Length: 165
Image (cartoon, rainbow, N blue to C red; front, top):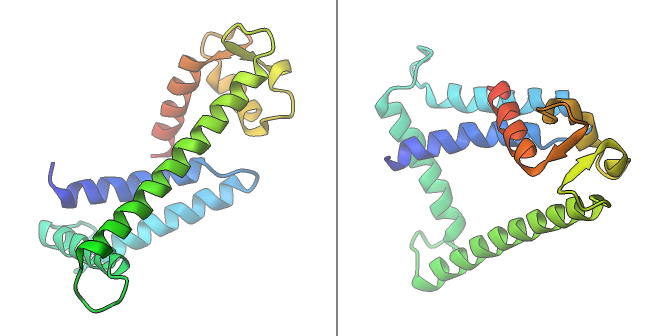
């Protein structure tokens, strides 16, 4: 898969993922994310024909790469040194580590809620600790047994992402 295509898919997917990660004012945030995605599309559609050609796509990718380059160019001299690239790599690694840490914390929180250690969460176990999970309980409980398993959570989150498209 070429880099411009990956860029576009990631850009579109990030809007979907971020739209699902919001809390109370979810509808407003979802609308905001959709508006941003539409704005990025419109910005890429240079001739305003409602479609993005390969040339327009490459142009958008070039702009994104230029932004990334500018971010990495710490001293803003228009060139990247090995030190600047190393620093950018370390920053990226740090962000990834933070995300993994956040995921681990969420998993630990979920495990902590499983008071009867049956590898599933009931409404009572969730209680008020995770209101968004409770809000989507019925959607996630695929077999309607009153419990949400890890597999049901994965499948449910995937299905909700598809609905956001």
